[in-house]
Length: 623
Image 1 (tube, helix red, strand yellow):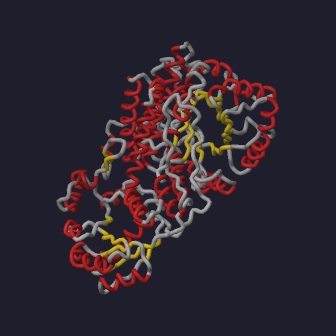
Image 2: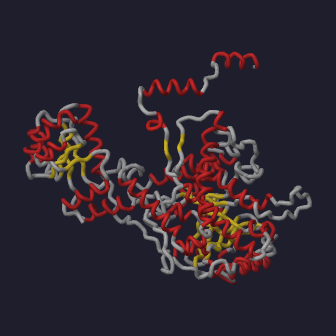
Image 3: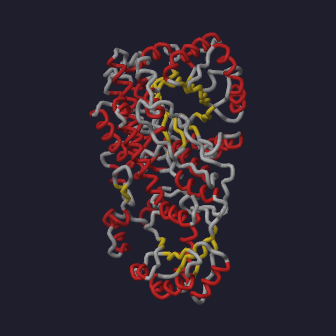
């Protein structure tokens, strides 16, 4: 075996970075390396086209899973909890649904209580038949009733005779969430946080101080923003409560993070790895006291430095049209969270954007995680990204950007102060707007919405659901418009008009160019739900114009090559006359000459697709 290895390596000698760069430079044939191959991320750093072992220099990649600073995970295995939200209208309905899904692979229940306090007989009804020692239980509540909900839970678990040390879950206390989403602070900040920690002392594995950066992700935040604000969110609990005299280890062990997951696959893996590392170092600075018999020399409780996090797939990139593509997005999102080693995953059902999830969509959401576990065995491999030159460098880069944001927030008063001043909302809303503008120009792709739409799809009864969180206006709130929202409004307007405009491809001249531009144009106008009539090609402009008129086309798109437009466009424009809107596919050098002849409409890769289609809708009297 050793001889075979030696032979293999002798046949494939090592190649230096300089040799790789020389070959790349040769293949680029004079093109700029930085512009062609280096990706500048929205997070503000550059990603190289390739990485090598030497790029690990200076990075700490020697720790094991479960070891401080937990970049490779907070435990020695990669099993995670499969979560599902339970939104029963009453305790009995919630219980029935919970019992049903527990038999279908769910290991964590997220009860959505909101403003409703569940105690006494209603709590007993809701948890009837559920073994609290065998499943994690989360109770999503408003912060002003969190203490009462916690008291009710402790009383219930004690009454049932459970071993309180085995019960896992959380009661949500998150006043910053209420400010960002609802514009109110009914809980008066962290006034009840100390009391809540004390109430839940018997439940050692039950958490209550929740940071919810998932809402930032769902509002369009970039990865580094979500992470930077998450760190400041958690640190707000640490700083405020330790200053109030509560031990650092007691505070840290009650904090839980709820992250979002976007479709930026490798970036999300790096985000979670960086999050654990940075949070561990933040908590370490508070010097939480270790109470174990086998104390470390410095007396610091490293267990308190573990970040406990749930990850939830994105709502921001969900679409009403071509909704089954949402399954593809959420599957890659769940996979990145699984590879990154999160504690639990909640997959958002694919139909969440337009209706209350039903049994079918919730079943698919559960099975997406079960596929990762039972068929792909991702729970059997700990930190498979560890040691990857690319992922390790991505982890370090996003950690640096997030850390800089965290420091800036802390210098400006901290997370609570920034939320009340509206600075968090302003920054995240600006990112959401920038991403929607990028989608409008196809710089950010939504398959089935702004690229490759199903032109024959009808939404019918599917209408985008609106957020019902807004209750007050004491503070600015986050915008919850999805990435696809404006495209959907455009297409729904076309559908509601009762008139489906016909777009006729007048293909002529160079075969390769006319076919490519016809495909581009069909994809372009399909985003508005128009009917596309493609053609193999015409011999003359007059023949094409005549065929378009017979088809009763509303829009006629001339598809040819840039060199031929000077000849074909004027003749075709004259042949069409005022029978339809005439459009040229492309941005030829002769555009100004053509405009002088009255040809005003052009579509090309630099167009703002959304604004251009809005203009066409206006010309067609579609409102």
